[in-house]
Length: 319
Image (cartoon, one colour):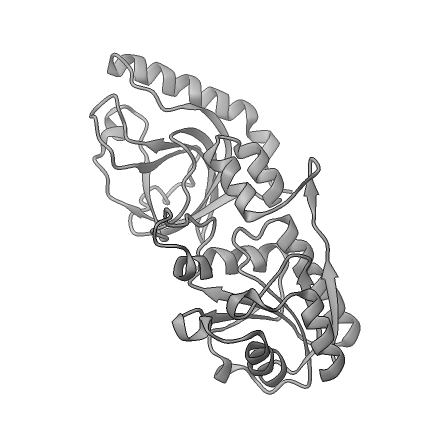
């Protein structure tokens, strides 16, 4: 998959099939869109293209009086998940700035779809809108496509338990401690890109050494405070672990949330992860974070948590 970040870098195309969206999370609905794009491209022997934006449009357009949006994926996470679950030929990442946000639907279609990508077929979601004041939608695009010589496919909602899968609902599930429902809608485990940084070495003294993971994305939506069965992936290995998201209340009354992962069966020679970029997957929540009356009680709980993790790991091994 080739990642292109400006229109000028797009090679001259004899035609293409594309889909478009913010694609926050690369959930099952997004995957259906991209898979349809790949299928239509294959039928026409044309390259498949995903058009997305960085930063997320809501970061620029959201009312300043509202709380800043917390994202499911940064652009690197989006690219990773697209390549893993629905790899296209080209991922086009457009810089969403104030100037870009003023383009009308006509201007966007002419500049990006028709001139840069030489579109022959577009795949859009049933509720997708684009252009200034969101004036372009599926019907608008169909009418323009008829006059400009390309077809449009509209993909309807993908449902989970009779609810349309959406990034908004997935955020609600994560914030409401329903990680299982969020992961079901995502079609994969909730994922975080981060770097292993130095911590306070407290886990080492408890005989539960941890890797402290600092998210790459400042406005990443973190799961609620608690202990999770997790998996860490590096460019060398994949390893299950027990992750704590929280403020470590047994030791201090802090407010800064940290992410610490105690890894199981880490490969020999790979114990020092400092500075490594990792992919952290949140598989299942075990319990909420709590304050213990003594360090001994905390250690007993951690031992029980680890036993629970070991007992359920088989449910999450990748085929």
